[in-house]
Length: 502
Image 1 (cartoon, rainbow, N blue to C red):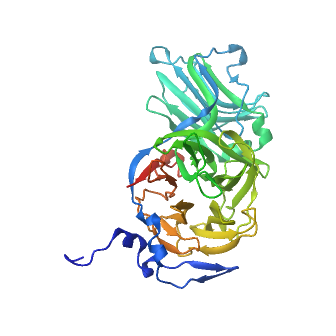
Image 2: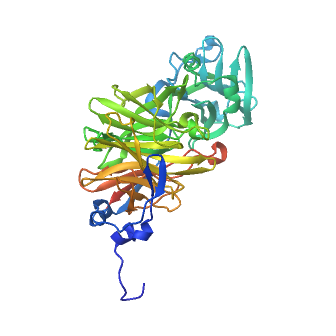
Image 3: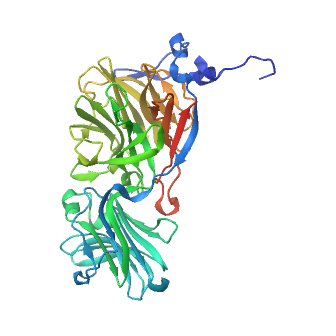
């Protein structure tokens, strides 16, 4: 721009020119055709969402092996029952194959006796177990499975320990991880899924039900033992819990958000949870509920979805990441009259008949003037990944019946995080485009009308919009910061990122 030349307003940059905004694939029945480009209407130019400008105000990372509020075993200086062959089996076990056991011990004078050992994991009443174990005699940390009277060591590594240390077992789906804390926080040392699953499938409800939390601290005085449902190495995929009309569901001034809790592994090792927060202090996030899926004879960690309150029932929409394989991913749903904002729940879902022949995830639903608007990600391929936002509608009472396609943004290829948000009486479909590093905004006809004025962290942060009762708006989202990727691989993200409108 030359000095004295025409100035471009922030609103014009967000809206773009008609050519810059581009076109979408409009849907008519099963046919998709390019919608003709048209000049933006006055209503579009005055859309209140483009008056919002966000800045990052906070960043933090939830991390717990045993989920806060879901501790089943909490022993301080427990007495060791030497009459039970070292392994102490507790009465309770996890409701789903997402569990952790932490054992903290101290060596006399900073050193461990040669016969000392520590174990943590799950065990049955008939001498079967899945454990991580450390031996002072060999300085070896191992991961073992015992079945049919035979113990198989699946992974091992030499780890020298002394002083006050923690040894932990973590189960995420069928992946077992051994972690150590020498004073700088938990770090994974060993992990294995394939060999564990070949010996025991802990996703099977009858198999898991036979297992209880177990631990041992031979020739040592344990400092503490904690066990319960696995927590998180990070969080992602936030979605505001809403009423059917799109307004936030609140209790005692707190709003609720579903999050995917990153596990120790890939997508299958994550699971779905509900958190509450105070919009005036978003850092005050509190884990409230754990949501797992019972389907196909398995207990799974399906995640990335939405909870909607419709009258006296909960509408549940989620994505089948719990047993993900390319070509299998799809949206699932159910209804419940239980309090899904508290406790542990095993949801029995069924496949959602979305109007697409492709893979799908990230469902979002809102009912306006008797019409359900259903946003979702449509994915022609998951190897390699290619995905974009799509929109459908129905006038049926059930949001998943008789859906007709409206539009799909087929010109986008790394765009997900579908959110339906209402700002000052206008409802929009929002998404997150990794290629463009921005948040596209669509109207309910599926037309792309601009983008949010907000920072774009790493990965594909979802534009989860939350009204601030004191005025303005929040975006509570995430980034791609991994947890110990060298050992655990991709999937341990991310930090919570909070933005506030100015």
